[in-house]
Image (cartoon, rainbow, N blue to C red; front, side, top):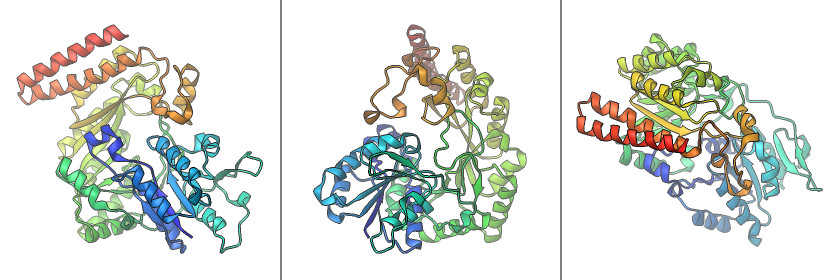
Length: 462
């Protein structure tokens, strides 16, 4: 049985990512790959990141797989639809079954099935994909398709069938390490090295997030918290150091410091084994304190990303973030005082946000002065409370098959153009502040003038 796993993300098409250049390997399908091989189902991974749609077509026509499994997220949705269409139009691939999984599929089941997907895997993919592959394997007795939890499909009458949810894995220790040897990681290392001077590799220690942020999707792991042991994570880090020449780790977990007990165990494991490897991670201000920051520093953390989203407590409360903006500022500063770089995330255009709130965000960024920050205009992802809140206020919705949730605009306090200018204003205003602190007065003046120009455009486009 020939199985190909892919994800449909092509770096050369993503102008923003080409500028940022922080590509990450497809960790999800590498976990699926190793799980299938554990149960004697060899598979190939076509990592599209540094490849092209044409090369993927060539691979499919050459291998003529029995199954193609495609990880699908908001960014890759349109390419996934292209892949489906290609497979369905090729006579030599008429036998190929298309399985989709990932965060985008849960809330668009009928759309994907009616556009040619044969099966949808909902939630965690390892056990469900294996059972589905076993069902499709002609050398094994077929399991009744209706008894495979966690899938959706069209029955013989073209009616959408959604089987019961599969229980989440309780013990993540049963998972194999992701099948990193299936992809050319050197391409990732080189891309990072050329842009940032250091390379990075992704590692996952936990699944799920128990918090309630209204804009955040929980389509795969749900509102849960499950974690691998610190011993297991240390094993993986040792294996990485022995296998690759890579400079740092990017922990992909939503809230790395959620468990202080686990963090202490992690520190103990690394110290006992004398493992030293720089890493960066994401967390929340309310799961940090002086002791946590000390543990982060001792275990190699060189940068911690602390979510804020806004400098306005009112907006943070509207998001149901359940965090104090003053605590965010304090933890950013405390991390820096302990020799750890601090990054943060900012979002503008959230329902209920006023211009006053936007300027509170500018003040917040100046007072906390993170080493780095990212900023975006809020958009609703289907299945989230934010989407439900603004669904009746969409502006000129586009056809599903030619757009993604990123393209959705809705009635807000101001126009979409206003928020685009607000993003530029915040960037210029904060960078002017940073330049002034460094004594770069000419650069600070130039940036301040740009910020003032964007403020004028904001006034015009309200």
